[in-house]
Length: 473
Image 1 (cartoon, rainbow, N blue to C red):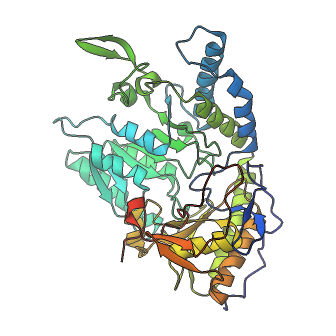
Image 2: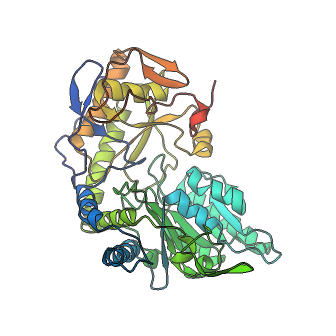
Image 3: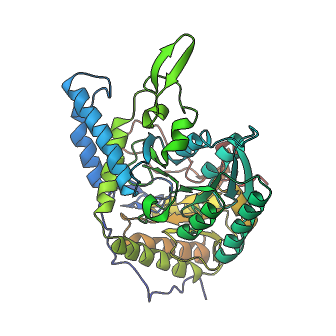
């Protein structure tokens, strides 16, 4: 099929967003001097704030004051806002009655915190953790640094991967060196695909292992309940859940968290401090030293409330329509390959990764931005082992959608990639200091931003200094 012959039988141009987001009507400049509405197809990295979240932040900012230890009226209000937000966040993910909800910065922060709470083995060696090679670095590196981690290479199918997990857990239990924890992605940040959570939890619990779910890509797209699934710990980020104000959460079983090493040493985490030693709190305070991010917690809670008000079937239908169109439209273009992990994966979330033969992923991303006003992500998406195993060491391009995405944005991406393959880029591009840039980029910076110019970090090219990027040639 030629690059210009696109399948339109599943076109989604008329699909509207489910909820308004801040910046949804923002116009961005193109290299030809025109302006177009920004098509944000990079929500898997950081999602724009829901309008309801921004409104809530504006409402509570005048009430902001010190938390937990202030006697003033606004301090009492801020403390109530913070603790109410904690309960709302926990309820949104089906926390059990005795679970703790700890406010963190993001998923990475949450998983590093939990890594310090995995119990040691009977001989005093670090606790054993089983993790798959499909994980984002946030759910891989903390275990490699802080525990006795085994990285399991996933299979070509979901069924094969489940068999491998069962075998690894069984062998460890039989050798009397059982795993304490299985770390699992809720949905791949590369492809949106997932493993069946309920089934994996049952397998892990059969062999005495707990399960932590990296919910960074799952929570914004699908409802998840710790109580229903039996998942022991769940980590997720506000900035991916339409609340980009610096908060995340770790929700899960109390015993490990109460006994684990306090994540930060400082005020608020202690009951009593003497020169000879310190008595630490239990509960969330144990890991929340310092002044907490009240506004971030309120914003995340507001996002949870807004998402909870949407019918799960409506969210899935909206996202599935957009994702199916992305896949079918891209696969109809010559030289475009869509990345997949498992041949039998079902119900993937709205993340689609692809390559265009003959074009560096960084150049594709720079072209989409400069000539079409479309934001995507390129590189290896902080999932180096997975991209290497799948044969995409040079990286790829990722488009992602959410509740604020309009179908017209998806159609624009498909058409833009088709034009790239058919006609090539119309502007000039070069690699400068490892970054793809537009030659003599004429695009102005936003008025009132205080910026002197653009920084080409949307297309990271080959520069390893920025991390999560393709290897240099």
